[in-house]
Image 1 (cartoon, rainbow over the protein chains, first blue to last red):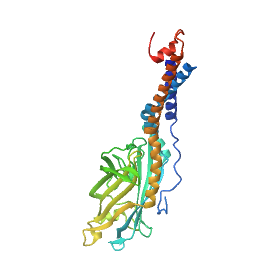
Image 2: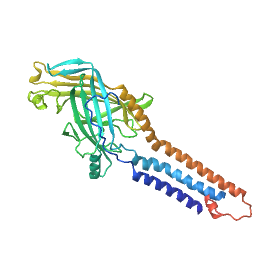
Image 3: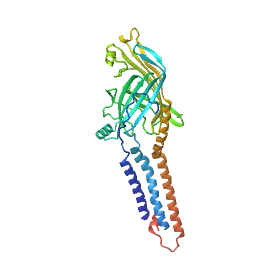
Image 4: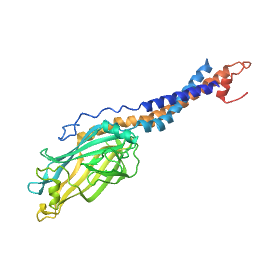
Amino acid sequence: MRALAAAAIGLAAALTIVLTVTAIGAPSGETSPEPLLTTVPKHP
Amino acid sequence: MRRRASLVLLAFAVFFAALAPLLRWYAYPRLAKIPPSEYQTAVMEASPATLLDYGTMKPRTVPKVSIVQTLRGNVPAAKKVGKATGRDVVVWDTLSYVAGPDGKMVSKIPERYVFDAHSQDPVHAGGEHVDGDAVRRDGIEYKWPFLTEKRDYRYFDAQTRTSAPIHYKGTRNFRGLEVYYFEQTIPWTKVPLPKTMPVDGVTPETVRKAGTSRWYSTKRMFWVEPTTGAPVNGQEIHKEELRGGTLLGDRDRVTVFSGHVKMREDYIRHTVDMVKSQRQLVLMLTAYLPWGFLILGLALLALALLLEARGRAARPPSAPAAPAALSVAGRSV
């Protein structure tokens, strides 16, 4: 019974972490203020 | 004490063993995506190239023509389309600016490309266009999906405003990266004139009224890093002609542009470096962490069982057996 409880705790922790990280996701950021170029840049 | 330690190890074993498939098949498809705020530039050059001199209406050889491509993620537009479609969407506003040897504009074609941030499937919303003409893309453009497969894809051609297969032609090594090589050939096709012409007073309307049309053919080649789906090199053997009408005098066609367009060396180096680092992030979610966690989980499970077995061996024969220990061993007494 204790072993089952330990396994359940491990599984719950894994699910919680993965669900939380995917729910938060990556920040969308903002549109770059850089222009669409109409000159040839010297370097990247 | 040993029993408690083995239970803690068991909890960690299950934690890591469960994390492995969850990361690969649940987190990865949701976390791996193109950020909506991406900003990228690339410079390609045709050196030498043939370019039409609009003053004399005769083609001439020039030392270099540069194509500057800018991609800028439009975050507000992506949010708006995402809300309307319920998908994670990226909106790229792009400009392909062609500069002659003197730096003056030869052509400029703006585009809006709307696509799914995870799969790169086109999304038909948010005003996708090429040079102001509404289009409905089918297939990919600029970038391949994550974990690119060894197969043909459909690739959108901005000049013809249509999609056609781009063929997988084999695996190559490019600057230390394993890449998939793709090729697409667009046969001579009548295409729209650019909205912005390089000479004052000449408009697409005046060219059309003269009965002249623009034709185009290209062979495009991409070297794609398969984990990220990012092209690390691109080339085009690109030809454009004006055909028919009174503008050309007694000729039936003149070359507007002809050249072998290649990515500039510094941009190749920059792209390869960037892709090499981003590749590690994708591999982290698809290979390193899932396999690492699985191995760690199995090792912890083995350790938990070992501790439990030692605990039982050290126990005096007359001592009563604990039910929890028995359930770990999977035996009943």
